[in-house]
Image (cartoon, rainbow, N blue to C red; front, side, top):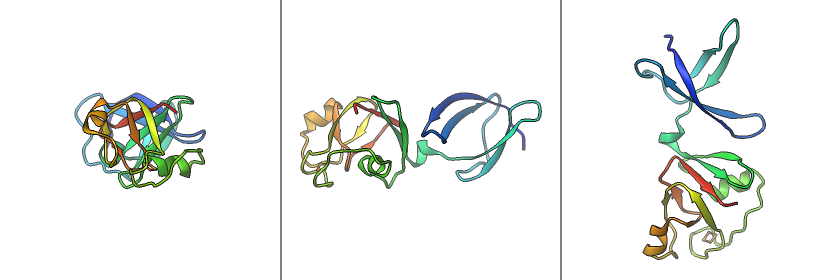
Length: 145
Ligand code: FES
């Protein structure tokens, strides 16, 4: 199957890994599932191979505003865990949404609050979150860190 698509976004995930978002120029992408491999023909004899993922359905992205680093967060991962896995120094305490030690200001995105300390009004303000337990409702969260 050959589809013609346009690159609509490129996100650097690390120095060696990037995520690309494509939109079909006609029709729809069908018959593809996360994990499938695709050949991208970039012109002349240049062909690159990639693996498909679907983070919009399976998880999301967290961006660190201070450095622009963007990291994938799977549906079973915490933002705190992802940041620590990448060696980032992040303050935390209980890791259960009860202490507020990991409270982080948010710049953009929508939060699925799962902590036990913020009031409904504070949660509705969408200005900060406990990154140990709370998740993203939007595909991307931009944290003030
Ligand atoms: S570490 Fe206690 S609320 Fe996140």
